[in-house]
Amino acid sequence: MYSKIITHVEKYVTPTSHALKAFTSLLQPLELKKKENLIHPGTYIQHEFFVESGCLIAYYLDKKGHKHIIQFAIEDWWVGDFDAFYNKIPSKLYIEAIENAKLWSISFNDLEQLYHDHPIFERYFRILVTRGFISQRKRVLSTLQENAKERYLDFCKTYPNIESRVPNYHIANYLGLSPESLSRIRKTLTEEGLNIDVGQP
Image (tube, rainbow, N blue to C red; front, side):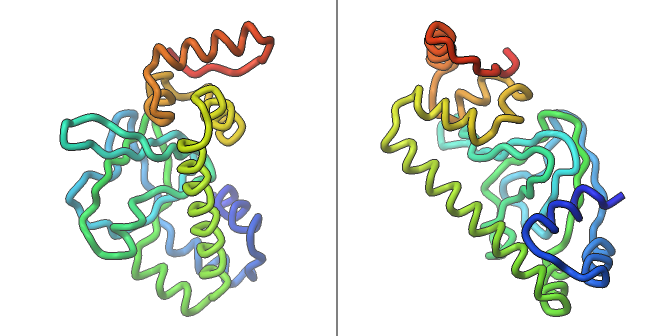
């Protein structure tokens, strides 16, 4: 039942069986249908979510109503509005399932108690936060330093399992490109003999 999330935990830390049992006892299952929102702007966030199966996107809308995707989340990813979660402020994000999804949730209060009782999990989540910060920094630098083709190739390397599962317009949005520009990049790569999996139209 908990095998996938336990495997994920054990990639980063080595908790005792007692600590793992305490952790899994705090998890609550949640299922989302495709196009259903997990989080809306303006809500206070009480939980973080581990993706057991499915795919979600996190995005915000600018003042003109334009969507900006900032994260994809598939199996073995944690997702949420972490700013709102940790700082007790209203969310600024939408998080939407773009496939049917099964999640595990854990509440802020339960997580704090878990840190106190089993510090190994504070280390686990600290490692994840650090990795997430590094990933976001790399994305910012990529946007500043690389051209569109290079950013797309980085995307394919970083998210190989997402590339073939999400609509092309979501990938283009994430990369800050138009769908037409993304299509041209893919055509060029094909002409160069690079075999890149493509997303859904």
